[in-house]
Amino acid sequence: MVDLLASPSGADRRAAVRGLEAHADGVAPLCARLAEENAPSVREAIMAALIRRRSPEVVTALLPLLRSEGAPQRNAALEGLAAMPDEVAPHVEQLLRDADDDVRIFTANLLSVLPHPRAAAWLVAALDDAHVNVCAAATDGLAEIGDETALPALLALPDRFPGDSFIAFAVQVTAQRINRC
Image 1 (cartoon, rainbow, N blue to C red):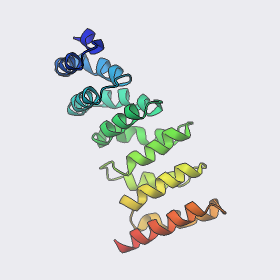
Image 2: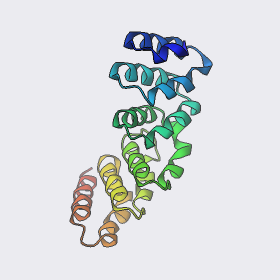
Image 3: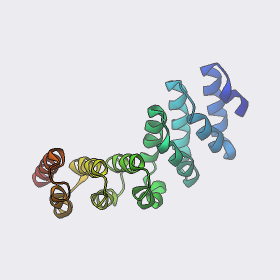
């Protein structure tokens, strides 16, 4: 079945996905294929299979795709991770401390759609990041899921990045959204 994942035929690769989904050892080959799969229909089949498996093993296999140069692979990983909030939760703080700014940005993006009770608190913690784009992503996420507890950290952000008019504007808009809720 694993051999079919490399077939030139998308139909064969989708059939392989269905076959591997039923096997306990199918997660690793599915995640490996996801990292290189170019056909959207096969990527979607892989993600659906992995989301149905919903396990720490799947999350561990998807996390490296946050470093992928391929946007479709990164987006697929983010989609899958967002569907597994309890399994992702143990990794969030480490992801927010990752040496790669992009991974921290993607994590903030993930948190804005992660149905987890601590998501907003993690975004508030991300506002302490030294990289302005991580803070911008956290601010954007808080515009979606933040509440009044985020306001002190949020309102302090423009002072950390004086002269950055985007941050000042984003904080203003986010604070207004939070205050309306």
